[in-house]
Image 1 (cartoon, rainbow, N blue to C red):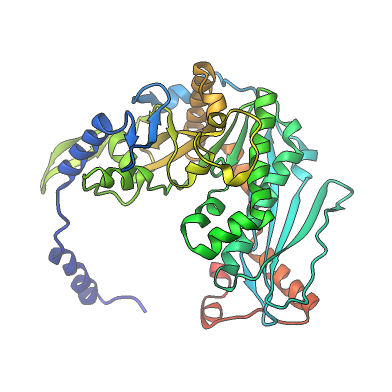
Image 2 (cartoon, rainbow, N blue to C red; image 1 turned 90 degrees about the vertical axis):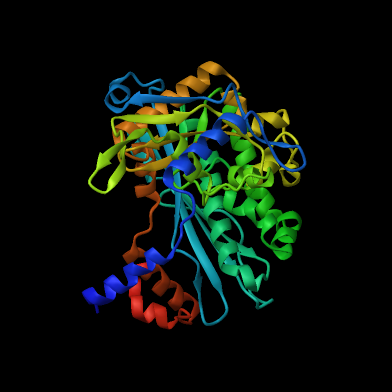
Amino acid sequence: MTLDPVHFDGIARLARRIDHGADERDHRAFAETVWNDFLDPLVDDRGRPVVEPVADVSRHRVDCEDVALADSPFPTEHGLDSGTINPTTFRNGLVIDIAQAAMSATPSDLDLHRSRTVVATVHSNDPTATVYDEWDRFDEGYSRSRAVKVPPLPRFAEGVVHALALYLAESEHALEHAGDVSDLLVLDGPLYPRGLLRWSDQHPDLADFLLEDPRPTTVLENYVRLVEDFVARDVPLVGFVKNPATRVLTRTVKQNGADAPWANDAAFFTRVLEVGEYVDDVDGDRWERDTSALTYTGWFRSRGGVDRPLSSDGDALGVERELSPESYEVTFFVVYDPRDDLCYRIEAPYAFTRDPDVREGLTRQLLQDVAVAHGPPTIVEKADELARIGTAEKRSLRETLEEAFETTEDRTYDDHRWGDEFA
């Protein structure tokens, strides 16, 4: 049932009862203060640099059409993504998620596109439940699969099976096909398994699991080895983060005594990268955004939050690193696309971005990709399409699992009400 106009107006009137604090001009002015005075470097309350420029604190803009038509710095690109059916709980107590990873290539490589790495992670409170934990080949050898059992963690079962399936499939597929990448690999998401690294901050049980169980460490080790492989072959790799939700900068600014008004770091970068002007309107000044150019920051080194374990003074969760610790550090730049009012974060290991020429080439390539695709790079969307498990396939796979386990999915009223809408 839709809202009657009178009810809609009544709800809208609530906005007039909320004082949203400083106005838009003040927020923009404070963002400029942080940009100019806080970031070279940004230190936490212990004096540790958590965000520091690789070269200098800088902002740039480039015409969308000009960069789209420029020559590409990298002749070929590969993309990588992993998709899951989402954690599924059954009435016999099993909690399962299944992920498949795929790699895309431009120009296209049909054999590579056919290949998949499939991982099923299983949680059970029944100590008699067992899993055959070995790799198996299928599809005439093009693809492989594996089932992994995780220890009993009832409160976090769904999150654990999801993260391990997603990142294990992605990292194993990346390692298996690393040699197919000759110029540039773009991961769909962060450079390292951020969802897994975040466990250490969430709850003691998860922190203990992260440190004591070999499976999360094995996943992180895969990403460390991936970086080492690409550095050895002098082939860059980056992570393209579509929804950057980090709060390291925002949280640290507050630690320094400033009341940062942003929900997250992406909101801050939007403030400092959005170009426009205030123009007169019938209701007063109105902000008018310039949509002709992409704007972007210079590169920063990130050593706070979930990036700390892979920083120069982090322990990498005990994973042995063959290169100097600083080589693995997350560096990033942020690009703002005014056409959609969206920020994207591009991450790369410091082993590559310490070189000004590589840094410039990566910047120009990713700017061109965003300009041409009017959003995330086409190579990333192509990998996403290959790895995605559609709604109908998810439903069919769950039914197959029900038959195999001789049980049914543990459904709630919301499942009945919404059906497959949120599958």
